[in-house]
Structures are given as structure tokens and as C-alpha cells.
Length: 213
Image (tube, rainbow, N blue to C red; front, side, top):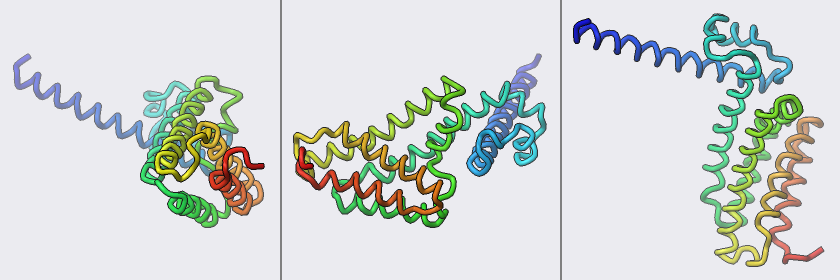
């Protein structure tokens, strides 16, 4: 094979690889949106094929089965969710700014009338008891999210916003639990009032001296 032919072959392989990557990304994004609306159990591979405008052979070229696709969706949704929360929380240094974060979260819930819940929390409900690998990945993502809250609270400690003796790990876990519980109750009632109340109670703990009943 001549150098020109080798170069042409490498170029074609590169284009095919890029095309394949785009197809894979489209399949994952399509599946993520379908699962957000219909749930994991309510979404079939045939649904993904039709909505994603791909063939079954294309889908199976990238994913052996639905379980493999669900795991890819978890990574996709998780990366996107954590990126959003990191952007929102990484610059928060005051209780007023944290309250604005709370207001934005609740307002988004109002716009959706509480539907669909948390992108990650909804996946946990459907897969945690059926796929140990997926459950572990979700747990890791929640740990990262909790870490964002811990980082925020350590900044609060440094600035004297909360007492130095505050257990930031416990408070961060409480904040995350309030958000997730709030999402779940809002989804069940189609009303964001439970979410607002849960987050408000968690934030109120930051305003109290440690050990206050």
C-alpha cells in the first residue's frame, strides 16, 4: 500500500470513528430523555431506535443490551447534573447566595409542577435493586454532589458564616437528603411545597449554633 493509500485509509477510519462516537452520543442522549419522561422500565430499546433515528444494528454495535445502555445513561445524566451543581455551588460564600440557589431549585420545580424528580434520584429508584454496578455508580455521583456541599460549608466555616465546630460532613449529607427527599415528595404531590420546606429546614440548621434543639 502506498503512503497516499495509507493516509487515505487512516483518514477514513478516523471519520468512521468520529461518526460512530456521534451515533453513540445520540443514542445515549435519546435514551436519557426517554427515560426521564417514561422511566427506565417504560423505555424499550425499540423506543430508542425510533426516537434516535438509528438502526438496531447501530444500537447493538455500541451496547450489548439495555442494561449497558442504562449504565451509559447514568454516566451521561450524572456528569451533566454534577456539572450544573458544581457551577451553581462552587462560588457560593454566603447564606444569601445559598438561599438564591435554593430559590432557583424550587422555581425550576414550579415550572415542571414537580414532575420527573431529580435526574439522578429517579434513576436510583428504578435501578438500585437490580444492577449493582449502576447502583455503585449512582452512589459515587451522590458522593461527589455531597462533596460540593462540603466544600461550600468549609468555605462558610473559613468565613465565619457557621461555627468552626460544625460537622460539615453531616450537614452536607443533610442538605443532599433534603434535596432528594424534596424532589421525591414534589414528584408524588405535583407540588413543590414539600421540597421548599425540606430545603428550608436544612438551611435553618446552618443558622443555629451547634447543638441547639
